[in-house]
Image (cartoon, rainbow, N blue to C red; front, side, top):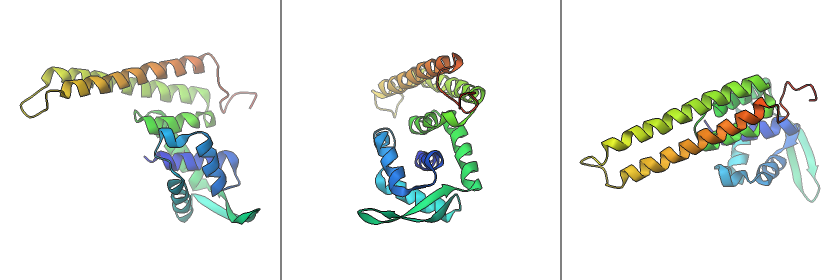
Length: 186
């Protein structure tokens, strides 16, 4: 899954109608380039590709003030559908980039759904941690470098941390923190 696509769809959905520069500016204000592979070029590439695929619709152009005019976009029904499909997948992912993109837009879903997805994600990351730890007894083998168990230990620690972090987010969600799609005040 491409976190860039989810991020572009999500920012466009949140601020529509919007233009590519505004999407770029928003993602860079989140410092998304530090926790994903999002770069200005990948944002514009995703916008172009999503438009060609019919996930974004061009509404026209607006004056750019000091610069050239800008195309203004909104999500289509297919874009809305892809956004929610990618969001669902991201919230259960053990890939940090994808999960981060999902967390950024979890407020688009009802609380119970986010909790269920994050419980699944926590179970998956705990299982990956356990699988990695179980592998350390088999190494080093004949062909692996002798430091391979250290690598397994590193990654099991990452997934242990992810499991604990997810538990904290779940605790806050279950206590009613964060404003989500089905909250009465939204």
